Length: 213
Image (tube, rainbow, N blue to C red):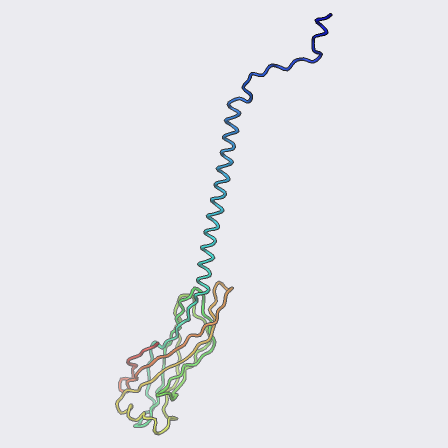
């Protein structure tokens, strides 16, 4: 009876083997933690790389937008038909070719303009430039036909001496107002200006010494 009283009414738990979790379980846990750590490092690297790339793209875009260059407007060439000439006057039917050079990454849309041809500051004729646009990083060529005439110049203009020498010095000037459009979002006002000088050889009916600033 006494032996039965000392026995526990609950079964005893099996004795521990003293090692806790097995080596396989420990290895699996450590390997899982290592994989998670590597994934976190990769995520951080990817995020950092994306941030750097995005910063570079934004900076490049800002530089392109803020460093928009002014398009250039130039006289390229001209041919003439002599309609009237005397010792003191001349009239030339002129076919001229102009160029609008746009070096920007967006197109340049310009308004109607006028090219003024002058002798010593006095107007001989004007060429009309219709509104249009020059594509990104391209040169648009424009043709115009007009008349150069000295009939309205004052008697003391001095043109008689130049006609006698068969070289008529002229200047051409103009301004094309417009906007450079970048990615159809950004617009910046720009004006392409012309400032050219030349000599017209009356005998050969050719342009010589054409220079544009």
